[in-house]
Image (cartoon, rainbow, N blue to C red; front, top):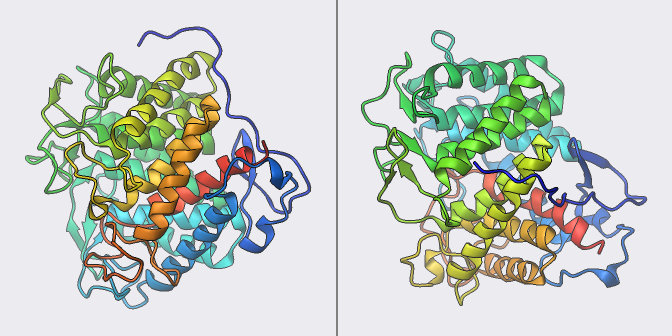
Length: 447
């Protein structure tokens, strides 16, 4: 990719003051993850805040609610680990498979919240998730992790997915940062090595999507029924960037730095469509884009994940290359995906009805818009985040501290026809959004 040499602005540090509980969220910035009662003790003068609807205290309060719900509802005390699915009423679905994506996201979430707040329950939940991962998901024969298990912990789908390994690395790094358990970071590095050995396409670059247990290419590359059968995807390469960022933050060395740089270059060179602020979703081996409907949700998510990766790499040339691309992706979403109802639609063919709103898209929009605010200083982004938060409170956050509805609802007491938790729905998008939003709002509210 063509890289310029001019320096790019850095995300400013969190304001200093007499806060309690300083928590190191990454090597470069310190923020306060506070309980709701201590969030009011900020030393930054409240009169200079630019946030009027979505505040740091809102984010921390919602993080508390999300954490409490998952601690109360997700732990499978009969079969071990965590339930594979929880219905709309909060009850576990008998016999539901346990999927790698949900499990690693739970391991990541409890590790991050435990590290941020020092909560013993989260630490115990993270320990439980780590043990179960090693005992049941990790493949001792061929390396990597199984895609899914039966409810009793026996192997259901022994295939390997690059996407799943990326989330495994991400989660293992979080657990290492919580516990300093060297077995976790060793496993993360082993999984990264497995990706480079088995999934990396040495001829055309990038990473192949799916494999059988022994790492021979799978006949069907799809992660889910709605995906195209394509050997390379935006989704996997986006979360490869995320995994490499986490590894370099947790235990930086020359290998992690090289992997992170390669993942950023791949995403910019191939996934970002040339001369446009748009992401291709599916590709053949030669990186020819395959026809698919655009995903605004992934574009706003990519906008801030790419910037986080550039910050972790700490290379001014890369930051200069990433910053305008991150802002262009956010601008595309704001201009084309923001609806009159106040939510970001995922697909361009939507009609703007609140029932089309998807929980994870709103979560990513909150972080993406606040990140654009910090990068640009343009008040439009904070206003957009406020709008999305107001809609999310009405349409996704049910009263009583319940996990977010997956789809938008016309009122806060409307019944939810969808599950609260499952293979693709965990506390990753919502919980991460509240943590990342709190970090950015702490800076914005300090003026």
